[in-house]
Amino acid sequence: MDTLRVNDVLKDRILISRESARLLEGAIASIFATTADSTGHLERVQVTVDFDSVEGIAPSFLDELLLIFDKFVDKPADGPKRSLIVANPPTRLSSKFEAVARGHRMTASARPDGSWLLTDATGTDP
Amino acid sequence: MTLSIKPNKPKTSFSHAGELLARFDKSDPRNPGFGQDEVEIDLRECDFVRPPAALWCTVFLALAVKGGASCRLLVPTNLGVSLYLKGLGLFDILKGIGVEVDDRDVNPRSDPKIVLPITHFETTADATRVTNTAFDSLQSAHLGAANLTSVVTELFSELALNAAQHSESTVGSFGCVQFSDSEKGARFACTVADGGIGVSASLRRNAALRSRFSYDWDALELAVRERVSGTGDASRGIGLYGVSEDVRRPGSSLLLHSGLGSLRITEDLESAARRTRLFPGTLAFLSIPA
Image (cartoon, rainbow over all chains, first blue to last red; front, side, top):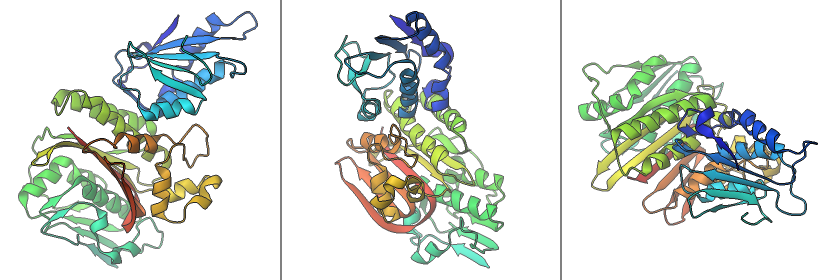
């Protein structure tokens, strides 16, 4: 599983802005560079973003993170292709974060270990 | 010309700009035709001033100073109220922008319940910094339930981000966070205000929304719905929606005041928009049980 530790890149404990999320783009690009096939095309991707040591996030931050995610992954056409796991989320999965996911045609659900799974609306928990 | 503004209900609490007299609605300091050489806000008879009222004073006077007026704040004669406002940072921030404030012998004192004194910010980077400052302060003060630290900070951050991103305020934005413990229980209060274009003008930036509201008050009703944004970007418009959803829990409330409209949302899913007195910009006031 490919994991990005947010705290390795961002030192703020409350992450709110789109600009902050964009600072993760390089690290996310590195993950995708190692998982893409030889043509650079991705069929199915699961990335874990670990928020350990982060104490709070705002919807804008998550939305920008998903925009970056979208940038590197094909849009779903015939089945689940995208899964983003938010590990050690600093807050509960509330309706505002579910709304952010819907804006990217994804669903968000809390998993038994407390992490969030954001996946294409037609997909299932991998 | 001189404009002197006095809260309508002295001897009681001055809670917010909605309590001002209607005649002040015509005195909008954002307007190039404001035309006042001197502006004075008179709090001398106030027995209590709540954060939304303090931020109205801040924004109104900041705009008036920006417009070239000579400005003065008459502080409450009640020393306790003046001490509170001093601790909240009202006097210092006003003096910093050129407002005359005679706060002699109102000596500053440390008040741990002021989590974040009135703080000026402009950009989203500023909003991030201010939010993290509020978080650090909340965490070190050990106020309220521990799990509320993130909740309070996240909600404040959304209000601050909204102001930084959408207000187009010529005087920037201001925010504060306060803890209070009264007979009604312990609470956190987050207040953010700007002297910008207001919610209705911001939503009008999006042509698809223009036919959906006519006034400041119905613009506020629209603004708290999911995915309503002046940007027109399909994935935006979660900020105020998220805050309004989060306050629909026992004991919480949200007051939005923009232009001549206000909207109050409380725990029982009720929201009530109304026509009210002018706020020259937008103010958001959030109250959360601690």
